[in-house]
Image (cartoon, rainbow, N blue to C red):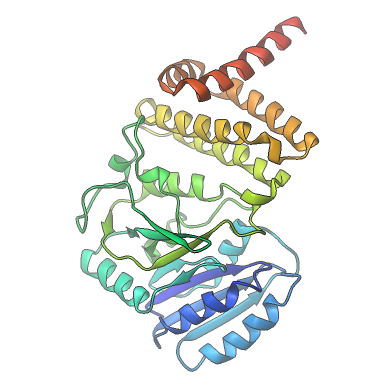
Length: 328
């Protein structure tokens, strides 16, 4: 069994994949496994991965898998999870990279702490600018209860830090069914995954290890394109609300879930001009329907506590569709 498996999905990242692959080489160990998943790229990415798999084979254990059709990031990661054999698991996206030695430090930390998973800060890279994004947890290198880190509802907490590639996870979480992503989600796949992890895992820690470089603003990213697939956030958050409503602590946790849903929804509505008109109409219709599906008393409380701009935008949409329903 490899000590660590790193799952790396790729899709049309010919420009960035060489940096990713060089960083894997700089982190390679014989007891590490790199699972390279090509999600049916249409550029030169597959050829790069084939060469990299041969090049890395002398330094680490390598598995290269190519999809015969594009399934999205969630499906690609699940393919990697199904193939991975490591005692610990980690993720890296095909357009990001790691500092040399980062993975060894990650494994050493999670083994010493003995917890279900660890999270790390990361470096956001936008063109030539770099900034550190910290896990919103104050205590470092201490065992914590993930469920306790969900709240308070009105502050940024650990479930808002959805950078799944900034950390490592013990295989027992995979065996308990906590590491697979919701199939078919092209965006926001990390949201229900992070909530499930915090509700059901037993222990975690935040460690002072910096070495993941997240490339923001990639031209092919869905967040830049304004693609209809961005509307998958509705499906993702409906799942969060449904699962959290069934939780033993639903009364305490639902306000946080609803608030997060509303914040993401307001963000997309504020930027609806980036969508084609037909997609923008779908966004408004789906958002309105989602507002009416939420627990209404909780939604009232959340809208009353949000800033004026976001609250007003969501109230108008809710009121307009409610009036239309009544007239119908």
